[in-house]
Length: 121
Image 1 (cartoon, helix red, strand yellow):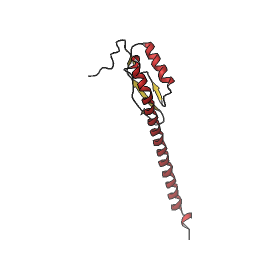
Image 2: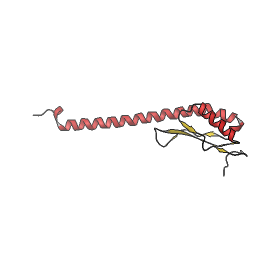
Image 3: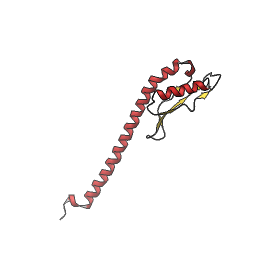
Image 4: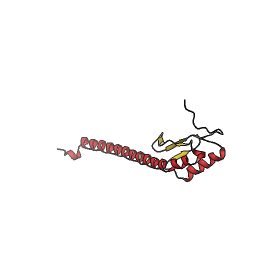
């Protein structure tokens, strides 16, 4: 007579439980990473957006918050307009030296010599 610990059904059930626990644990870790990144981006925006609004060159630039196509590569979109290429370069320098917690790029910020702000319908 076989004991339960030595049966195939026991080992199959134990293996399925281990796979489920590993999958659930990895999903929890991914969720924790995403929550931590979101909180860091919120704190960064609270710290940097007032600096941008205080400078007349950057008054139409907005930090849009946390975004991600994959939890492993989050980014922070930045949009708006600046009056000149020199101001765009200064904005890029300011963003990079302020150490954003996730990838941030000013590539979509537009240089507009009129700089009347975003056009809304």
